[in-house]
Length: 160
Image 1 (cartoon, one colour):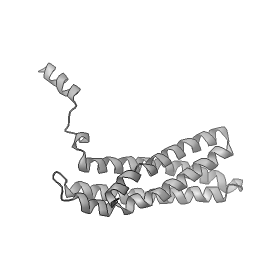
Image 2: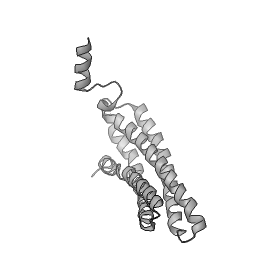
Image 3: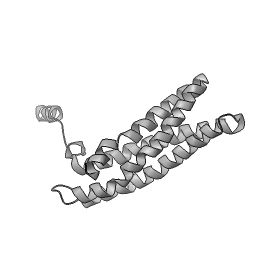
Image 4: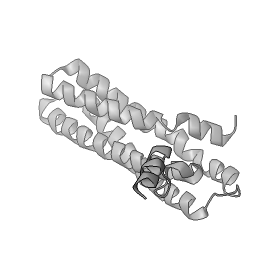
């Protein structure tokens, strides 16, 4: 298995762990359910851990695809910059979630850390969506803005 295969196989894990972790955290906070909040915090820590192999296989993946036809270096660079920001946000999210787990018995500290974890999970998810979109543009021209689906083409032809 090469770095590109690892990168592609794992790149959805932090995205969905942060999304699901954030949703469960919100539900747990609304219901005041400690078990849900604890599970969600573990998911957010898992998201931070799972982003590491995704990020660190990115460079090897770049080496494999940068000379392929249709691949533009600028798109890779934009994806790489977004990935760096996502890594930082997600690591901070994981640290916040871990702190919330550690201080969960102390009511004064736990509540602000839960809110911080919730906000950071949303920021992580948003940043990952952007990073994933930019990564997809590298090899998937069908998701670019200039591509029309068959239905859109038929509608446009009917209008002419």
